[in-house]
Length: 205
Image 1 (cartoon, helix red, strand yellow):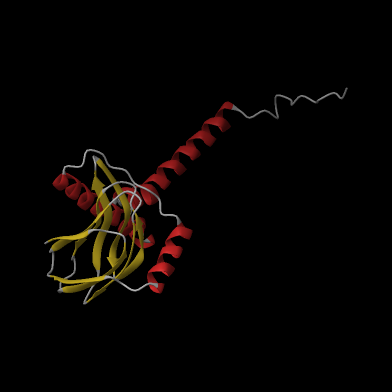
Image 2: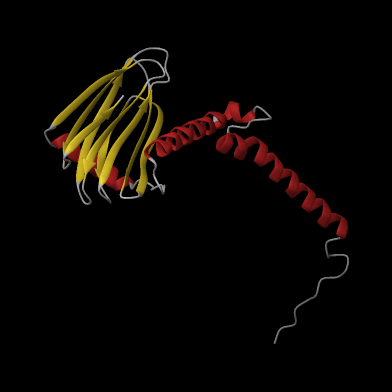
């Protein structure tokens, strides 16, 4: 059995060095909180570094989309809300399927500055709809979600977008679709192409 050499008292860290290490760790944690976490998550940027790194804008996007999603949830009286991460492979597969098929419906509308609109598909559980959309004249904010049967789900959301494509697979019966808002200074025309399984298109402006 080997003997393990015990450290001498001189080799052990002193109380002062331990305190110094703890203090440095605390300062580093506060610095990360002020320069990274708060700007990226809350759009709070007391140092200005978050704006330089583009993190503050990320936080503003999250806050604005969350507020719009909450207003929409209150509008429809949803009892629950949840969010799902998009499966990257499924997204690409849906995009490819949307490109290969013939569209059954095309919806076009124009939004004036600060105006909003909703386009929803009435779907049953298990239905799959494909879509592709584009915005001309500016950029637009959107929130792709669903509600029905006391359930709600967020599929996708974006700010300052000009196009998108993919598919919606309904996990429950209800209205599945988009809330759009024009935050630009000019009118924006949105063209939405649709295909797949749905019984009705509901438009609210």
